[in-house]
Length: 133
Image (cartoon, rainbow, N blue to C red; front, side, top):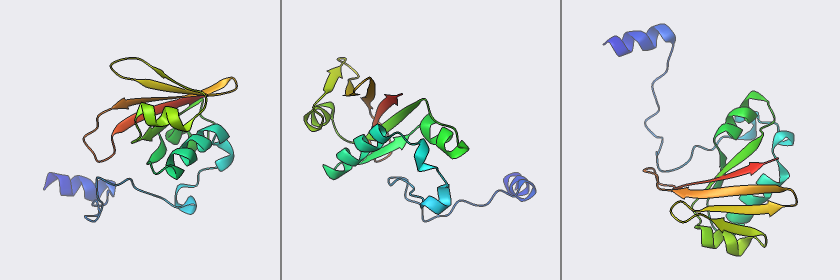
């Protein structure tokens, strides 16, 4: 009852029941309003290469927050369900670093993408990559 009152006062809407927590929420360009000029071409290339190889790959984390605010991100996190070995096979200049939580560096000249793997309770395993400019 208190939750209903707070929602009514704050104008918070109920969550739709049709959202599947195992699938990412996809928004169209009109819905999110992200300026694609702020997205790094190398981060985009990594996600496209992974998706073309049949993996799921998304820009996530602080980069998404910055893009939604219209600020150029200093780095990009990439979540994927590919293993470090699979990523290494896709990129010529990829290096696996670490033993327990492996990170993959994908080099693009002076720029690089980092990607690491951590289990996640939702459907897509948590595998981050960081692209710094």
